[in-house]
Length: 175
Length: 187
Image (cartoon, rainbow over the protein chains, first blue to last red):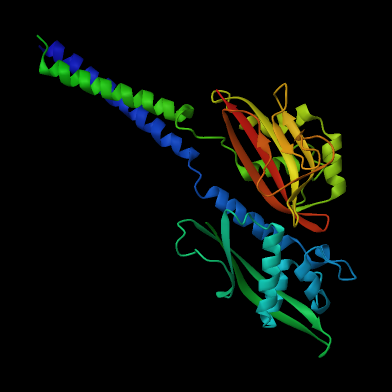
């Protein structure tokens, strides 16, 4: 009778071991769940482009620009040796938010991210500058932030104007 | 006569075994994990690995000269082994084709500025429909292609998983998208 009990115990232990291995394998399948990785990547790529590309790389000295909107604004840009997000910061300082909105719209049209898949919002110091619909309904949203600051030479006052620091935030979500 | 102990043990045993095999099936591809590709890793490898002295992407910037060098100067087989081979899952997929290309959005559609392929099929399976000729051009063929917004580069395999990773870049003075398409035939 005792021998029979030992066999049952061994059976139970063996079954528990198999169950544990099964659970471990199930948990290891989580590596395929990459829900937020593509969105994070898209957001990071967009922010990376905005924070590395300078105005002078999009426009030549004669203000011929590859982005149409920038061409309209080019003559009034005071510092062409700054990146796009720094330019946004400068425009925010000069209270010309509509220029930021126009340029951001232009960049989106140029392919900053896939419009058929994502929606975006641009905020500076928590002020919404550019907003697309559907943010509150979306279940997946990624927020990227950068601190921007800089300067430009004001030809009228003949002084260097320092602006910032401002927190620039790009929120990206799936449609 | 079968005892209750035996029935309970047998039931637990069967339950454990089914858990075990179900988990194995899930882990090794039965749950359709798809092509498990890290976008960052792909771009990072393309940027640095092939040749340490040659910076292909320079963060988000690329020049026409660099891209031409990449397309004309690099061996397809070597590029395939260096960039892509580690992403393959031989137990799920038979073969995988890759296509690297740059897309430029225009008013009328998409312009593909050069493409580079890496394949381990005998015939290549990622093609672009060329609006000018009406033919399907193999990815990696010389020249530029144009297609409208509705049509996309196609994978000519019936039982295939397709992944496209992309990154906005500054190509000379224009903002374009560097894309990498992967097309894998399921077992």
